[in-house]
Image (cartoon, rainbow, N blue to C red; front, side, top):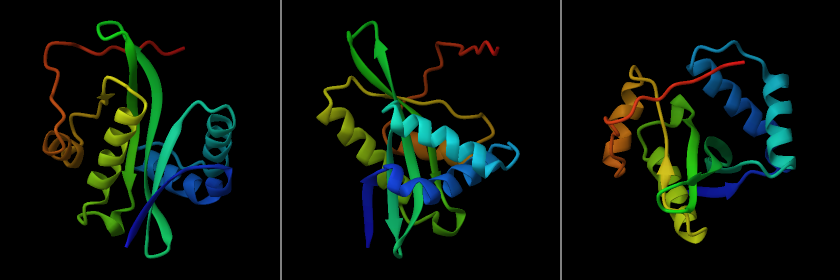
Length: 147
């Protein structure tokens, strides 16, 4: 049986372990303590809404949302910034459950939708997102400026 709940400071240790695994997946060096501090600040300042999914009595995945605003709809839009399921639990629909929860949260908060980006090399994500109703925006280029 699966259970989805919003991450709080009570979940910080388990969430930080998952978040560290997520970062390593994206070829970042493991840094559990720095990640934990980052998550603690986001939760404390209410800068994120994160759904944790539990299976077999442990948290095995998460979806992290950040608030944006869309100029066309003049409404909030949620950035699905981070989505991760422990590799041992993949293939059982947990990522889809998390995405569905994010969609429901959009409805509950009267948001216009979800925005996400993923690397072109993320075969799992690039296969999953269209199955979940996401449309690839091929009209725009996304650029980053890093300080």
